[in-house]
Length: 335
Image (cartoon, rainbow, N blue to C red; front, side, top):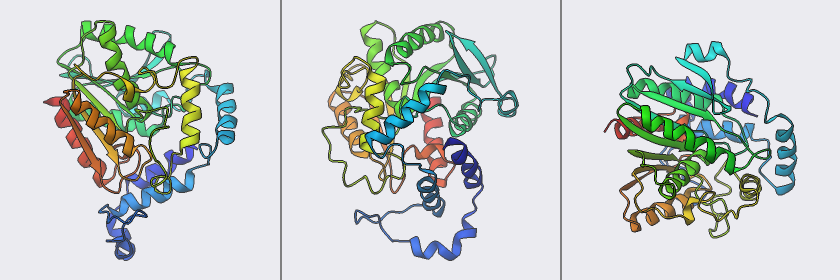
């Protein structure tokens, strides 16, 4: 699936809206399935169609997800084939071994003015993909900083515990050697992990980063307290039963409501300045909005950017709306 998505994503990133001028009128003021009028670029409309096309349905039911998990279990511990030296050299990145994992590093540590620890998404099951790599390479260049991307252990062969141990050691080393500000950032499951890890830092008495950024963060892995039905037909990527199955595999013996798994149930007091992004056409949208409100009640300095008509993790896709989101992210990191 990711190979297909990468290939089509490359085409998508070069879309010129003028090419689609003839069909643009059909989409203007057409509104979403929920009756709201949505203002989104033609590229965003095309992106959603591509996402629906490449979706193989492995999150559509518990049975399909369990089949996918069995396939992932057979290959999850193999070295990542998508990360080649040629690709990384083109994008100014290097691949290193650290804490018994691989880590992709973008930017020049000798001149970096800030550091970002980026945690990739994929439901804690699916490996990092080219969209993540392209985004992080671009981000490192834009912030004139260092972006560190750990390839952390994934379910079903691994659970949260190994990753927390690795991140704790890595974070401690970053604190000792960082230059300038430090940001913890992630998308989807990685966004939820970024938030949960910041909550966890309080329990082990380590300093918070300067900034926390979540792109469509998966904050409620339990997914039992929200009515997702209005968003299911809008989301071309995610579905509830499949995500719940992913979440249970990641949690292992831990309750999925534990804050280390679902930060929606955690204590946000004392967390760093937080920037959240979500799209109105994703299943996670209502949970992210609820979490933002909880952060505000907990006294956090938080901002929520809502991408009207946007899909899950839309800042990663190179759309006009994505570029606006990236500009806001760069501003936040460099502030």
